[in-house]
Length: 151
Length: 161
Image: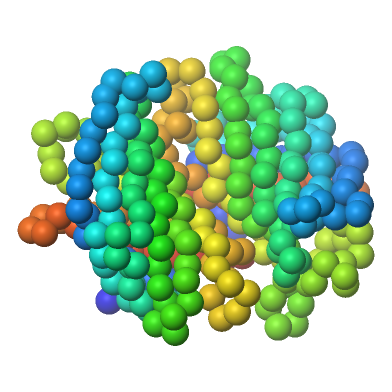
């Protein structure tokens, strides 16, 4: 090992996104396994590094449902920062359940990438962000907690 | 609110390089480099093996602000012989005094800058079996560039849920 100290990550809590969903459609089987369509209705963004909202009806998750039961998250939607800046969020990651009957996934982690105009929010386009998700009911929504990986 | 994220160190990769090519002039998409992988080693608690020699490269894209978007494709071979495709994505850039990327016009070749951001989130594909956890786990890596000989060290962490 080339590092003397045990390797560690430097994670900084960045923001939390609450996303409400509209439709959940499963099309299965597809030649690649299965495909889910979960459309984004609305939501909020809160935290020390970004505040704003999820642009209503701005996209969806088109997750790939693999034969081993793992969902490959493949979501595209829009955020709007509190200063009006548009932010494209492309979310990638994995969701799986050790017990398929459980509502809450046993693993729900992602690493989104962003595109945003040059300006105060453009750090999102050059920073690795990782987050964990939690599903909630009534109404159907998820809460994503995102961290910036520092280097 | 003080949210936390659990993670665990899984393996370290040493990647050896020989040549680095910058596309000149820049492409319609901005900057582009070609950095082929010569070989390397994998050590650590969850994966051991080697980087298959000459198995791919990084075709990183250069942003207008000087940040580089890693886009690397190459092969691992686990110590049990299992092939593992790695597609690495992330960001690499030297930082100026303001903490922002050094602009493209101020870069000196492929110079290693003391303050560098080098973080990646690779995705993997590998046969069903002992290494297939890599295909369903978010992995984050911290990179470090080292010269003479030109190589990089990546420490990889599994993100827990």
